[in-house]
Image 1 (cartoon, each protein chain N blue to C red):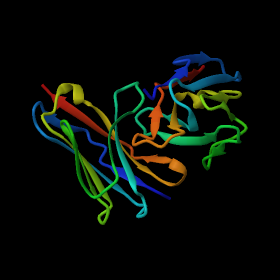
Image 2: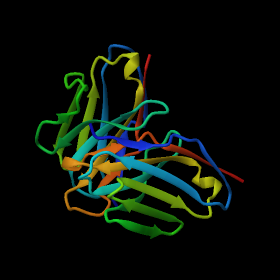
Image 3: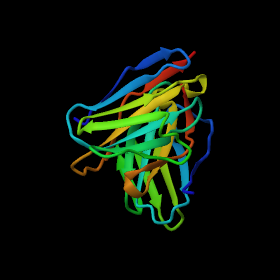
Length: 110
Length: 117
């Protein structure tokens, strides 16, 4: 059973701070990893994808991947109240199927 | 680009009736479409994978006779919830994978909220 684990939170950070979201996965052969943001009542929105070990930056977002540790994280710099949402970690397996974690609820306080 | 639509966005139906949900890729051809279900405060659970022109592949525990999936063209897949019951009330989300591989491989629709009374 392929599993993706995330801290459910809630994670609360003040506006302007760095929010750090973590995810571990069980399938050692996984190669593709994704972070989605989901606002309440809405469908997921892709934030970042990462395929290689190391860091990948896109604006205020940085994804970090460590395949040896089976760990992927998402850093959000200069957090804004509009970043308040549930962040879902997803791992792509065979046949392009995505396995999602349960998500971490992030609250950014003004 | 890479827009996926779903219709309807929400639906209320009576127990025992059937409901059809459409998923369309508007500006690309979708080799594969995925159907997810999400209960309140839970993550997305993959229900089935459908490839154009072939039978859908259902995940373990998903009743294929209850959740009928048709993927008749490269831009349209439908999910029919047959004989719906209150426990089928959920947020149903489709995603589509482009025929041409891109970095963002799956594009999600806006979801359909089903309430069965």
